Amino acid sequence: MKSICIYCGSAAGADPAFLEEAVSAGTLIAQAGLTLVYGGGRVGLMGAVADAALAAGGKVVGVMPADLVNQEIGHTGLTELRVVNSMHERKWAMAELADGFLCLPGGPGTFEEIFEQWTWALLGFHSKPCGFVNVNGYYDLLRQTVQQMADKGFLAQSYVDMLIYTDRTAQALDAFRAYVAPPPKWGVAAVEQRY
Image 1 (tube, rainbow, N blue to C red):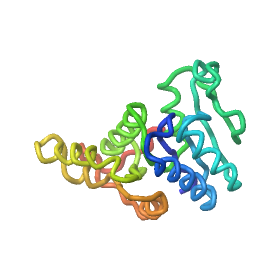
Image 2: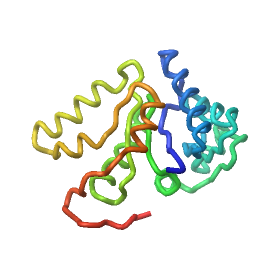
Image 3: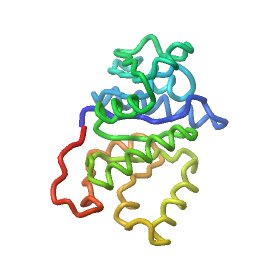
Image 4: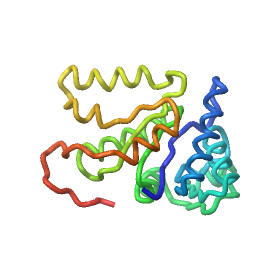
């Protein structure tokens, strides 16, 4: 594992623990010698995780659509800021650059990004870990909803279990290193990397 993609809010959120964990995440990723891949923003948890990784001597690659850069929310101090044409290109580039996908607290964009990577993983398009840092129970209800997908017959339990939930980023990094992907949903014996 050489890089971790962090999905998180462009706001700091109402709980100070969210910002504290973003700073911790950026610091730990840099100290582990991993590249931080993220959405390229300078605001909210996004900016905090990037600033912390940079302050700890880490490499930080941001990916942002040109329209958002032009609105002056792009981080100008990154190791690299990749400017792309659309949100679709952004997600693809982030997926290509990362060896795992980790969510800190965030809003609908954060949910959408991690759910896409989880879907690609269960379909066998990649075998990279996906997880949530469940700061102060932020993802408790989401975890219950995901479990209901299996309970109601829409998802095999193995694909619920492939999601990693931890209280802290340090635990998530350990779990990512030990991760073994389940077989793809449609039983493909070996699915090559799609990106």
